[in-house]
Image (cartoon, rainbow, N blue to C red):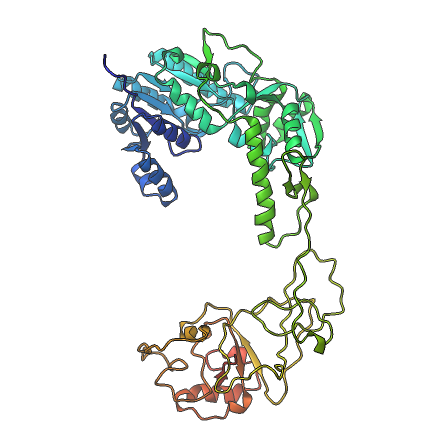
Length: 546
């Protein structure tokens, strides 16, 4: 007796939202799997990772286009089953696939893109009513051409509706305060995870029990009313939501007055939650079968398990991502939850960070505010008398002043200490400006907000190894500081304003002769009393202080 072989399956629209799940399910089930792709799509960098995943699963790519009849016929001739997962904008063009299947003449089963509500057993209103009519038209065309088929009715995609509990746009996450319910919340809806829908679809392609019938995916554990869904969610978050019920008359008015896509979303939910079109009819063996009863070996994801994933994912979002943008604390109903197996979830509290340990010289000076960032080894200045406790955003610390080192600290003997240079904190209007430095030094501060300069890369290393300097282009007006062609002098010139650093100009060095930088010297001598930021390339003899 010959061993049964799996059918060859072609997926059209296999890189879309639901199509990629079907491709993966087909390959994992052991079917020779083919994906119809456009030649230009193979070079799309946005889909490179998806194609790599398909390749690792053994998926074959057939070059073709739904709008190129001959390429479509050539692709269909190589397979036994055709599954269409095209988006709703292309539903009206599925007649092109049907025409190619008819011409090829070798297809044993065709599954059109009809995943969703049963389009012939509903109470839809516009605008979704027109979408359902396109699917009905495709059904009649398949039957007229005599093509073997299976229709898959999975009702709701769990990955689309459950993360926001079927709330209309612009709601994007499951509510934790109040929720809107269309109707009285008693009609039951069906939610199925996309991967489970794909698994049931692939199971049906070679099953004679699904030939020319509708495969309804209606698992008992995934069939809940809106009220039951909200109660289940309340148990996950440990809070009772305020339920706002909208009667059918108001729902129909909202559908007419709302823009797209809100009107389409409300129209679909009207079918489900007001009219009960997922479960208001019995599945007759004459036209359909139920998937979970037909394939009890399939382990599907329940709504309860899916909501657990949503609850943990939202907690991670609000505790990790939002604080990284220094946003105000989220609303109390968005705070993370911690729970034990036997205790209900309780909100976590945000405790302040522990105080830093006292420094050795803390008894020598008055109490001061918290220390500055770790890279600054100097104490913070006296706090401003203005009260900023009402601000919700964290404010950066003001720039500390340079104080004399304690007598016990060894001073450098040969050269200033070399340490990494960090950008200064952003200026904040609520903090006072630091006092001017001693007048004997006449320090002027320059600040440039450009990428770091490679000429000063060696200054960022505490103990830089010896390196031979690279040849410097002769076209540059003057060599960088420290280059062999520069006369040995403590006063170094800044080649270009290309580093985010604090550089200081000593006015008493302005008259020092420097034959390599005479033009720069004359520029500074002329404009020394002006704002030197206007002359970044010829600012004077600059000395880096560490």
